Length: 261
Length: 250
Image 1 (cartoon, rainbow over the protein chains, first blue to last red):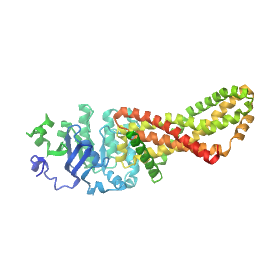
Image 2: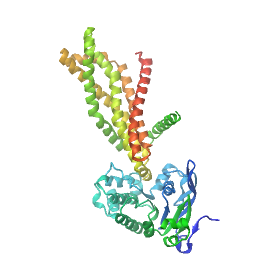
Image 3: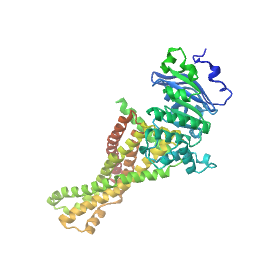
Image 4: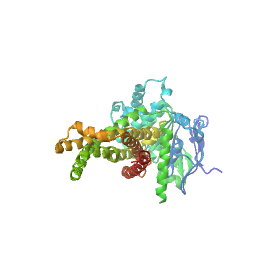
């Protein structure tokens, strides 16, 4: 019997099964000492979908997303990205697969010794071959910056940017290889409500423009309400509940309700 | 005690990984040259000034004793041997441990806690190759050059004191210095400078790369990088002298 509480799945995942599954996580387990952070987490992300994973601080959201990009090794379980099993990949193949995944870090993680231009050029260095039939580097950098409305910052250093601008430049860097999947780790944390709203709008624009699939880790209910097609609640290391925002927010389950108070 | 051996084990594994990845393509040449410039340029002035002053002070302190024994003419050879064999490499390495080791520890530590190293990994670049291999290589290649530079200024400082106090000409002073020096003095000191560079680079990178516990951890990484690499320098120096003794019969 499934532990997952699905809320009106007919509506929330309507049409999802007919789309290509770009990310499939099965029975993911990860412990730190005796602390079981992920205890059999399952999740699917479909092409063009915005999936929000919500959980309390320390619930293992960031651990899960780091396992997805290979920054952490899971103790057990399977992660399949674009049909490739992550745990079986060699370093070179993993790097190639990473070109299909954009990652927006919680603190932006811009390289502070490089200009905005160099930050955006950095991912292109490793994947130049993949880009050889595309426009030249300069065009790609400017195009990515224009998509986050920051083309004028191209020669600035990260310490000359505000928190919101850093987050947008980081998003441009995540987009520069035109990935099929974008992973957002707390995209609005530490930002004021107005800047948060700008970032959320930008995420929606990016999704429409590039037709990417988005996996968003957050505990910001407003962000989840606006951007999610579907949500997964991560509680006690498992996908405790799944559904769309409306369904989950109307749930009577106390553990689910706790997220929407 | 257990944590000490854990640390030694981790540092050894980190060093082994440097040798494993350092000689496997792709090579990050532009980052390597940038780091060479940083390491050399960052320490040049300090090494030069310290060497110059040490040369002068050493000569001023030794002079009265040598005069007492009527051996003041031995001053250039004594200073030359001392500076080239021991004081130059060790002093330069200690300055670099303080300046470069702490800088690398703090830089990589800050990159670790702000997830920049993770961002590099996600973008398909091997951060170990890009950050660690280039910095350690730069330390290995730049430290002997800094030692030569420090030695040269220390000898020049010594000559200035001798010139002022004993009216010794530049040519006479340096003729005596180079007469006293043999290949067996230059080779071991140059060779051990490579190892000093390796120790400073590896320890600085190891501390920074494995930094944790937020911004406080960055300070700890910078600080322990200096302490551990300085200690390691003395151990390496002792080992180098032992080996030199076997081959050159000091």
